[in-house]
Length: 110
Image 1 (cartoon, rainbow, N blue to C red):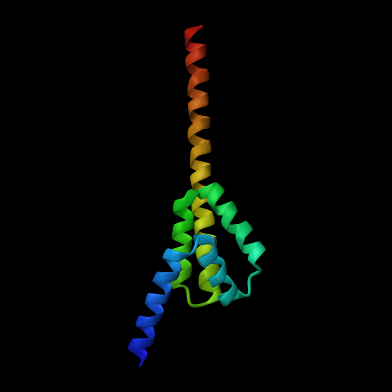
Image 2 (cartoon, helix red, strand yellow; image 1 turned 90 degrees about the horizontal axis):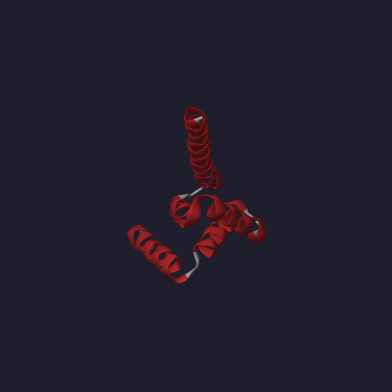
């Protein structure tokens, strides 16, 4: 019975993941685990998508599907938000460094 239950759950999760938009699945799962409001969840997913791209949303979707507690689901969100923020900081520092090198090159030419 347990094996059948797990198999059915796996099939249902796979069906939902292919039939629904990622934010639908994510927000449904957050509502089940944490009682999160759908509008709040959609705003969080939209923010993650704008900062981390579609890949970050897919990672969140997978992590939420595997989470079995609210704390684990929130951990997924926090980790991906931090990863996205660190990527943005890296991009900023790279551009900042390029800008400094460009200024140095201009001074060398004078």
